[in-house]
Amino acid sequence: MKKILILNGPNLNLLGKREPGVYGNQSFEDYFETLKGIFPDVELHYYQSNHEGAMIDKIHEVGFSFDGIIINAGGYTHTSVALADALSSVTTPAVEVHISNIHAREPFRHHSYLTSRCKGMICGLGLKGYELAVRYLNE
Image 1 (cartoon, rainbow, N blue to C red):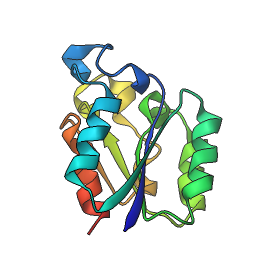
Image 2: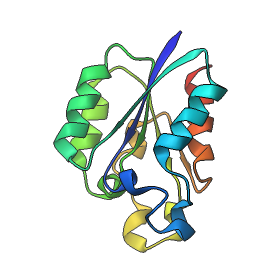
Image 3: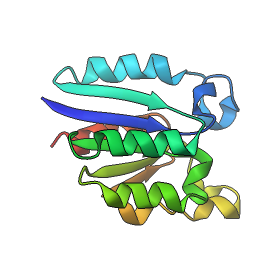
Image 4: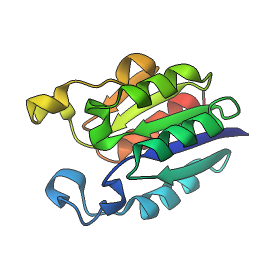
């Protein structure tokens, strides 16, 4: 059974409440239960933090023993060389996910420090992007 971590960054704890026109009305915790139902043969883990260092610690914790990391670093996507370095420092492959299409938003969101450190990036497909990332990592 594959082990995959979903790692969400700042403000994603507010999904379902925060800007529903951009991010939808469903909490990630509810969606995570849906994902577990879709993938009963995958050991899914979920961690969210508003703190960059905690996210780095989690990458270090699972980065040599899990089969995949799905990362939505929120605003840190566009600012964090440290998260990019953490992904480069481990052997577990990662897929970057964004609920909204970051390329159709403000110009500062168009650049990601993480993309070059990941196997791929999914953006603009809502929460469905997480399902697609699990499917990829579970192949």
